[in-house]
Amino acid sequence: MKKIKLNTEKLNSKLEKLIAIVNKKEVVIFASVFLIVWMTLYLILFTPNYYDKPSPIKFEIHNGEPLNSIINRLYDTGIIPSKKNMFLASYIYGAQNKLRAARYHIPNGLSYLDLIDLFTKGKADFLRRVYLRDGLSAKWMAYILKKKILMDSTSFVNLSKDESFVRSLGLQRNSLEGFLMPGEYEFYERSTGKEVLKRLYKSFQEFMVDSLWEQTKKSGYSFEQVVTLASIIKGETNYKAEMPKIASVYLNRLRIGMRLQADPTIQFLQTNGWKRLLYDDLKIDSPYNTYKYAGLPPGPINNPGKAAILAVLYPAKTRFLYFVANGKGGHNFSNSYNQHLRNVKKFRRWVRQQKRKAKQKS
Image 1: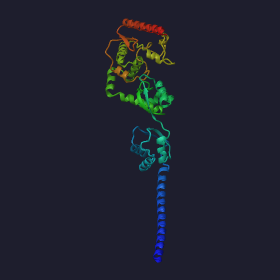
Image 2 (image 1 turned 90 degrees about the vertical axis):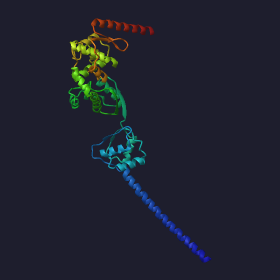
Image 3 (image 1 turned 120 degrees about the vertical axis):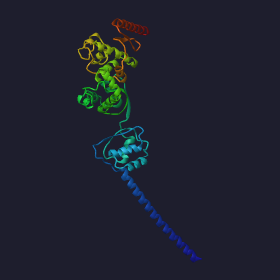
Image 4 (image 1 turned 90 degrees about the horizontal axis):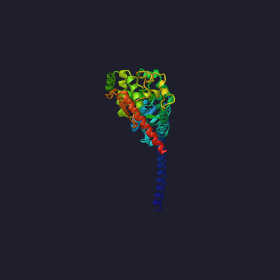
């Protein structure tokens, strides 16, 4: 019995030694595999990636753009050398749905994780919605864009009057005034004046479809003259339904050689902005003074928008030669000067009534 017991003890001792050796091997194997995986991931995720273009590269992620599309564009642009590695980094980081829609300026030498860090919480220029109402001048557009998207307003205004830039867009003029289409836009923060001007002019070009070009030819006026008259009409009213009537008044005056006598052209000449016009203001010696000079002024006085342009191309068929405010947001129109004077008296009577009501309330 003693002999059997001794053999059992020796066997257990050998088994324990064998298990210890096996465990050591497993630990070594596991540690080696872990180290290899870790080193591989480190090299993939943390090693800088270099591109062969001027740094930084401008890159935009669009609203709702899927990860696959973003990675494909990063690869096609040369910012990353491997799509698979970027996918791996994105999933390890958990960034599949965290990349922000914005414009980025990507410096050279970022690793995959650096890039994801930039896209998820780094500095970026975000899209901002901007509304530019009809009838704004280029200067007023610049003021709004500076406030909304931090654009360089001085560059915008100067470039809008840069003849070489204007002609590079295919417009044979020395200014973009009148041809910057108002409306609602989305611009990236810190967009350049050049980017914004190109976008606004492109929108104008897209509006001027073939049928409108044909109608311009039928009107007997040049493209620039149509826009110039549209800018005066927009200066007269915000009431779109009334624009075709006002267009008919000015077109009727042009047809018979009568001066336009348009107040908006005088307001355009005021150096300190809009004001209540005085009789002396009508004496300003300028080709834009339509009280002093017959015909259309040299160019648009604002950026009129679609409704005013359409009013010039499709005016109401009237014999009206005069109009005056009616005190209700619209105008009273007339064929004769005598009727016009009666309408002026009505308006002045309405103004006096409003002043009396205001005094009574105070």
